[in-house]
Length: 635
Image (tube, rainbow, N blue to C red):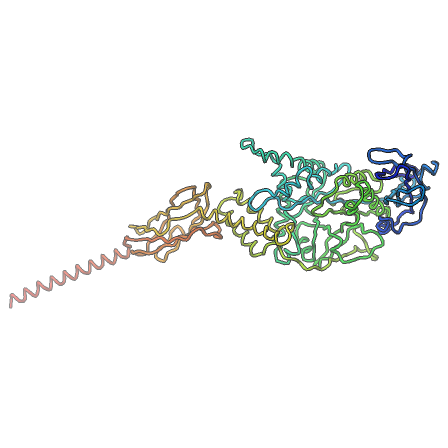
């Protein structure tokens, strides 16, 4: 409130005697966030500036409670006003119920009076407040493709995510940064879409009606200009994946997450900033090698550093091989909204704490980053009141996280060089699935895609399952089991496709010419064409057109003919292998018997020569016989 102005406190006097009094005590203003934290529960309050007592019976009563006037006009009698306050600042105010006959204090609380003097002592720089709202749930679909009912419940208007969506402010009033889980919002959008008119589904239609308001509210705020922070398709434990050598898999998660959000929202996505938790040097180095240009980290991931003022500037984060601009979120201030007490009190403390930071260095550009947890389950009433308190606040300027990095310069040290912070070392956990199992499933999926197409529902579902299997949202033994179930769906889909195609086996084909086309019968039991690679092998046959053929098998029966050339006559085997076009998946390895009755050109020549030689021999033999007979007659 401004110097010389007025406001009011609203106190719920439930279970308070009608003749009780409410004592309001104003203490000396605070000069740091540390002092603010020490006063929250009435401890370590500085000197008293004054106290005003109000009989409860004399106060105006409303549905919310009794209203206590707060008047800072020195001309107002002290019985109705407050102690004289001549300087801007944040002043702790103790409010407690007292027994007028004994003076004994009863229940009470600490609130704060934020006083500004915009006319005579305006601040030079409002504190930038970048508030990141994480909106992410566990994967929305089970391994069998059915929706997870617990996640669906979070999408409803009275569910966790539905309530967050309803509280997103208009960016014209208060800017926040939304950090939606790509898989979460992709599923939310899908489930919120009513079924096709030609195939009415009353259950799906009712579900869509219950969860559509939330996703629509998010869309409206994004369309109006609220920023979006991109991230992996599902939350992942970066250090665990990096330690397992799964750098490529993290990049695929980031690429898929950005693509999914782009498909869902189309605009306003910031792919250059990452809220990275947990984080270690190796993971930071990996992120720095992608499109990420700046990081938001949790304060507990940094090595300790001392400061007389609240950390309110970005810095350089040293990850061993280089540095990257980063900032640490402020957990204590954000957690004020989650504490005990009425929503209005929590919201007022939240805004007051930010005001204290703003007044620490009122003429320097500084900023606070607040980041909600992944499983944020806020009190909507407290959040709504906090948003109202931020709107048009003379000390605070809500901004998106991108604007925070643009407007708040790097913190400088004593040598006028950017301050550099380092990460704590940590022992990485293990990924939810082993790298070998993941890559085996990924290889099968690639083979499956080469058989069908990227638009095949089995490919779309398999790709989603592959990404979901790495989520860190599923915890413990049960979570790892669910992750393995996701990979198993790819195996099942692969086996399903492989079981649909077969080729003739153990059959005999007779060819009567040196070159001939051998017919091979195929069976495709699916309803869609399937592309396969057919490979031929034989020691006695050559294949003039090649030995490998990619062919498309239509549904049901079909016959393909392959050109062969017999090197000799006889009976010999030919091996036929049917696999995916990339060779990763093998359907069948068949043995066909080829009987060749054709005579080769060399054989004909040999036969002619042999016949000629035999004829010559017989001719010579006959001539010699006749000569011998003539000699015998003459003698």
